[in-house]
Length: 73
Image 1 (tube, helix red, strand yellow):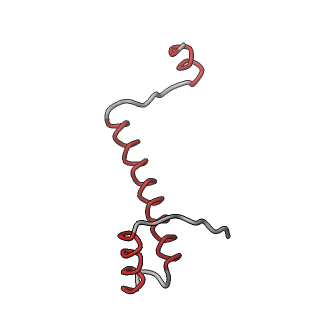
Image 2 (cartoon, rainbow, N blue to C red):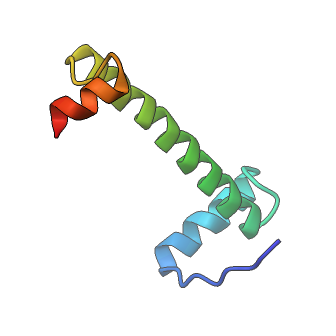
Image 3 (cartoon, helix red, strand yellow):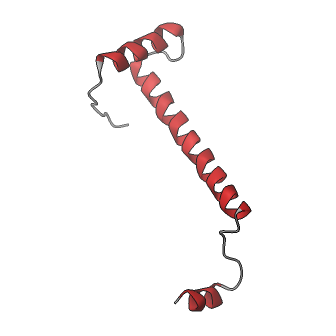
């Protein structure tokens, strides 16, 4: 496991301390790890939602990849 040093504003540090005190995580590092995990999950969900929207809008290509590449060239 690696260590990363990140400067925090006083407001962010206060929020992290509140989250530890509330039991969200056992320590400051765990709060940051959980926040990063949640952000990664949120980004994955957003990618799926964007893909679904593109399908709904007909922005996807279907068919033989070779033929599609010729059409795009």
